[in-house]
Image (cartoon, rainbow, N blue to C red; front, side):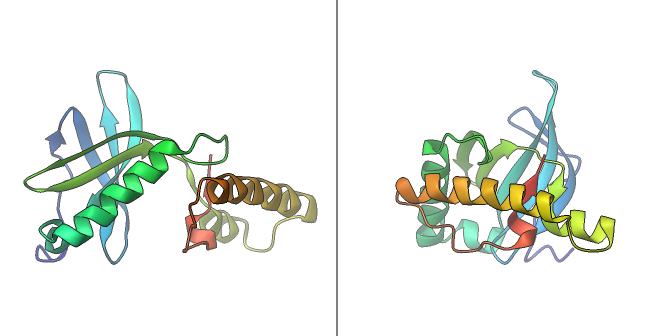
Length: 149
């Protein structure tokens, strides 16, 4: 991992969360699987990449994302547990889900059964409707971002 573009937080403990492994990396941030020993649960932690953590405009956008996610209460929207900023970056703590629609499709090696696909589309539509009613537009809807539990 290039240290100029990525944090290597695996093995570190920050604010009571033990970072275990990197789940995903995008253009602006990383998502880690972490363990919170005090309540014995696994969480997902989204972290801003270091080169963006010092840019006030980017940090404001990340904080806006945290505020918007915190407002959403819906059974098909991943809940946020915590958020903070410190000198090394910004952290968004969310429920850890098992995987994505992309991972499911790769695992089964083909398309979903029609009834399963219809049920998933209903749930995705319900989540998007709730977000839109709160004035939130997803802007990056794709199978890799449809998380499954």
